[in-house]
Image (cartoon, rainbow, N blue to C red; front, side, top):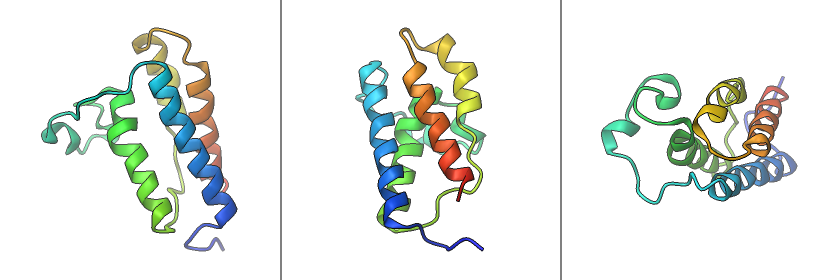
Length: 115
């Protein structure tokens, strides 16, 4: 049985991954300076796919959400599958090499599945 909260080592690993994902979004110059409209952030579609680009969802929903879980020592999502969508979408949406970003998202998925 898995504990409800995560260990310090796991937190550091996930925190490092989240920081690396944020840094990579900035390096690829897809880190938005302005927040989308509030209605766009309220979508109930997975990844807010009907109102946001995936990189926007990462920036405005995913990263803050994971940071909040870490700050509150809460459990990470048990089943996370961001990488498959990113592998499909990013090569079409991002100008530049998104290989490292995809690797980071794959790693995050693996960390969540190992909990």
